[in-house]
Length: 327
Image: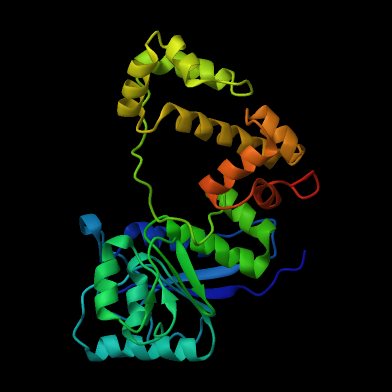
């Protein structure tokens, strides 16, 4: 296998760092990918002499630079959301990023990282996003930017911005998909143990809390999981839990955070995902084995939950040589 020249990636940090977003950037662009000819050489860099600080007093030792000329891709994992005094040190960063962008090289920002290109006017007249917590501040400070809320990421040519936290990984996977195809993007996603690729237009967050599994529901839930390929009514679950339908609905919502019917749909979607990833089953058979009434019902719930069709999911996550997609 012929090895391509490695693309050099600058992961830019400054003063204070968000450790999760920095971790996403290094996981995506600093690891070797054995078995593929795609190579990235990522470096965590800073224009500042002092070591950047993270939450919990973490101090980061990184490469000090004064320009970005040696890099092919720039990743900004985070940036200050407060307006900063325009010091000579900060101006050197602005000039370097402007020069980098003027040559048409790709810039990815994670979470608050979009504040950097916005500050220097690179996002004027373009769509951009950031973490929902900073939405008001972003819109107030940068009225010339077309802020898009409640999305995972925006992609505007050489400038792409992700929303908060885990959306950074979604943007990274999308970058790989656009540059190297879905097979490579899929291999990276699997290493990260990711859920299906999420399209940029999906919501940043969900209101449902992490679910619990109370003992008095254990028998009912275990029974349901063992019989997902069969028709299951909420009344059947209530019977298994030895509760009236009304009491079961109320206690289930209080304990699980979702309605019983919605929980059943979630479990069936997980079964469908696993079947689709095998690449051996048609969409009709997947619908049958996961307990949906028809392939149309499966498609409806799958697209509502993940933003893509079962067929698209199968193409992305199943081995193409085994795929028998009938979507």
